[in-house]
Length: 338
Image 1 (cartoon, rainbow, N blue to C red):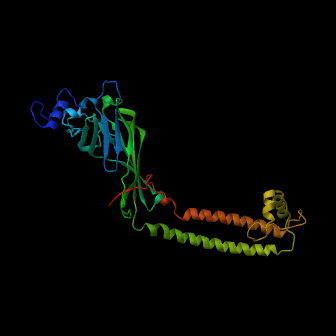
Image 2: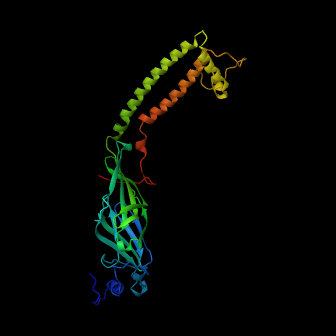
Image 3: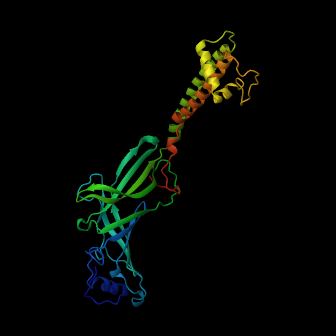
């Protein structure tokens, strides 16, 4: 503790007496006017977060104090913002539990504090990336000084993700976290803006590869075999229709003539049957009468389009791609724990 009436030869202790024993009141925010807004800047990390603000009344000339440029004041010696973590219950009791505020005071009046706190968060599950256990957790911070709810403002939270090279298999990992500004309906400060931290937490099970890929690949192959059998049946029927010598019904003839009028369909219909590429059939009569071979060509092209679409749908349904859309930060870092 600091004793203001005791003489000391310790320069750092004497500096603290000079700063804190000459009318400094740690219960009043460091502003020149009671109407001035006071801004606090925050750096958020995974395991801690730091506050930064400036108090001009605590600046000193280092050359007059043995070139001391930095001291460590006690938490009860300086003004500290009344902030709290808001949990999902939005009750009057703060869920923030801080053990100590490790603060550094510099000769410029800049103060950096790293409180050691236990916080609670509200998490929601995301089942779109099963078998990964994915949680989206939110933490809200706000000024809880009801008399200074608008005078003390927290600036944007700057987030930083440390680098971790540990394997993520079988562990819970924070893959990304970010901050923004939102509004909550809080007691005593209705619709007051707060700062929000969003954590993306993911658990990678050991059996993830077998769980994800083995059943889906089997289903994809099974569906593909059924489609191959249907394609064989359609091809046999098409070859039988292609060899018919009778004239097609009037309905088929009218449909073929309608398609033939369309330039795009006409270009498709002139291609060789079952050919690769678009080799155009040379014909001296562009008004060739619609017949069964032309009908088979149309069916063949339709089947090709349907099968391509069906395979794309099967790939989208059975081959899991969503689980690879990890919520990583811009550098791909993550922090894992057992």
